[in-house]
Image (cartoon, rainbow over all chains, first blue to last red; front, side):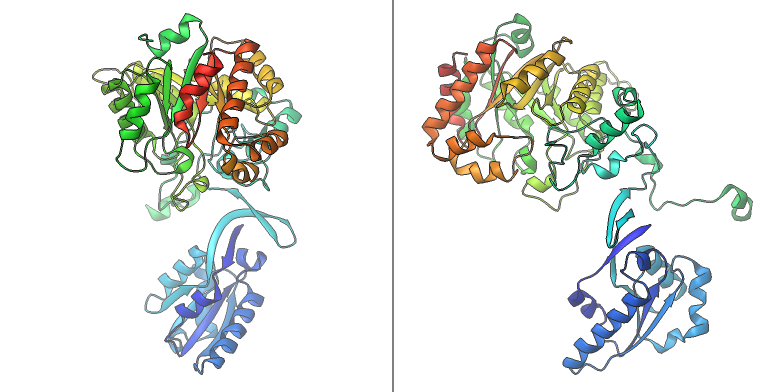
Length: 225
Length: 290
């Protein structure tokens, strides 16, 4: 899933500055799961804005709406059945960067601003804790590294083993974090596949990661030709 | 010491090497003076490449000065700041200036340096860089294109005998040797047992090993403690000793380490690093008997 964090409140306040009526638009998928931009977080942000602005005698009307996904046109179009977008000066989106952009594409005549900073693709480690697991490099090496990604977990993205800073199995960049290559070594040893680590991994093919990337499913190729 | 660094390593004698950092600015006078003092004392002189992610003059310029002063420079090259195009073009530039010895490193993370918001490049790693330099020497670039004239390199890598766990470190070292490293420069070693364990492994190959010795600085003890120097693992007892010492005492301590390493007859030489006190390098080498 995509993990995001809310922007500092001061920054958000600055983003809506000058508006008279805004829509705080939540997203019910990834950012709801990581407690950053779902229905509850939209309500919280709207209340916080109302309270802060009331103290400054700033008359801002705020509506709230959360849709299933902001990264899918089908769900964005539902917004039109629930509110009139033209009633608002601005849409404050609590989606990831992808969602903000698609909402902005659909409502091209309306300012859409992000309330979150999109952070990484990761997993839930436990209640309230998420960690990055994938850099979406389009050249996956997990089969060679015991299912642990050195491109993501190693801050230098080293693909041929650890740097010289590993201490008690921890990373030199952040001693609170495990060294990716200690994890990989231990996992491969456990799997009886340490020979995988003996081979020199070739340089990454960054060409596989073209920006902006796009994927068209085989079954749909003819439609878009 | 008119012979090349490669010839000196092949001679079998115990080598004296050291490293210096380029200036943060354009003043090379201090280094020029130091190079005059080091002439005849060191078999090879490492020149760091934005050490610890601190922006300094490019090492090739300092290596050129070292060559002019009759020293054998070992140019450090980090993968942190350049992609594969820039690394290869800088290797060719260095070779054109007469710089043959290259120490290929991944590089300390930018978080330790003075440009913490810089993007760490790491397009390729130190193993790839060794392989790329070997490829250039063979007349081909990383994309397989033929060079008009091939450079000559004598290549090395870095290893940390005190990395914990050691096994993954040794596997990486094996890859560096396979990729083209003829010599290794180690991080500073404080525990001789760790060095022995490391040497037992690397002695299975042809690679030559220069063991790092660091002049500890009493003023820097808090940084040693909080891990501000990646890969530098100073034992608690030594930290206490350093804290209560002055730089003269610390120099004596470094001399004792040099003697211990030489006496153990485990490796091919020492590599002195004395950040901020480079003027002590000649004294450490002379008193250490190398």
